[in-house]
Length: 217
Length: 319
Image 1 (cartoon, rainbow over the protein chains, first blue to last red):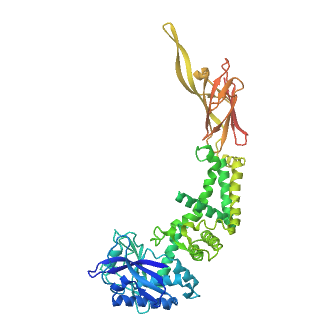
Image 2 (cartoon, one colour):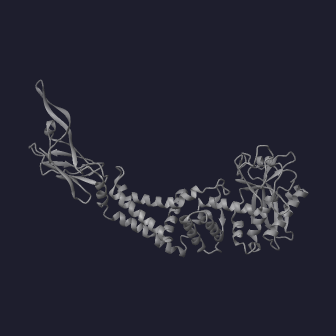
């Protein structure tokens, strides 16, 4: 079992580097571990974001016993863009929490509360492959805006990137930190959508995915 | 080829649904098929190949399926596609597919919802613990499951209806009567034209040569006899062009009878005939003739016939 989605890392110069967040199922005593390469780059606030994501997952849908998940930030496949030396900040929280929600639903569906069978289907069926998210964790387990958004979106929407993410989720209230006004619907061909919680992100994706599938089923 | 097979599977599924799942849809489909067949067999929009008379209603039937089921799906396209081009490779368990299909059903009207719920029920019959199925195979993965037998049997009534309609006597007079009643003009032959080449001898020195001259004349119309006058009366062979009331645009025939004084040349260049029927399209029909006796009289009668063979108008051409 492997869950992948897009995230973006910011290097020391402030440039955004698109990357793949990969979550793999492992057998081990630790509930969550970082891959060796990611461990070397991870800063303290990055690790805190991972831990918050794990706790939020455990609180919302549960956590399987005797199962462990490995979190890894990898280069975007085709371009082989080098990752920054250090992974700063908590903006990976959004990607990690979405990935963990789906990883738990796929590997341990019995953890998902039985009174929400529909939500289990949503978690298992949504395709995260072409989804990007950059959002921090707020005090109540929702999403809050990130900094350097313009650089991050520029990284995710660079023309040479192939395949590219189809949508980037942002926290409600996020802006581009420019006087141009509210967040646009599309940034360089990348659709932008605001979400407040992981659940709302999954619901929104589910709705769009069903419309898309209606054309090809 | 793959796209074609996908479209075919779409139509088969839509047909299976309409005929197996919904009485209203079944009535709609069979009713529209019958109406299309009846309308096209009695009435034509334009001169078109003969096979359109017999098979065009099949096209209309499939159009009903398309507009009812597939077109709404295209019009509901999201403004971004999270599956990109990999939607057909998405692999899920039947239980998850059922949830997706039920969610799609909740996004539309009655017929749309009924179709997707029916689709979901077909997948559910596979067993919710069935191995994962990819989106590309979802349309057909249940076709050969025992639960699909009743669906196929329901679908069989459509080809049976098609075969019956294709083999059934094609024309009725219903449209003819309706349309003719609405038309104030009399349904008659109102013009007969004659054309051909006249060979007349001409003397040049000691030699006699023949000069060909094209003749195109309208025949004089009497009360019931059209008379060949002028140079047309001397033509040994030629073409008659008959004009009749062009509306209604129903299938009519022109029947020419030579009474052993001339031969009629069929359009397919077969043997010469004393009796010939040609189709009337937009009120016009023409046929070729050749005089076979030394007498200048043709003695030809021309009748305008309905689809059932009854006569609308009859004229005689003399001499």
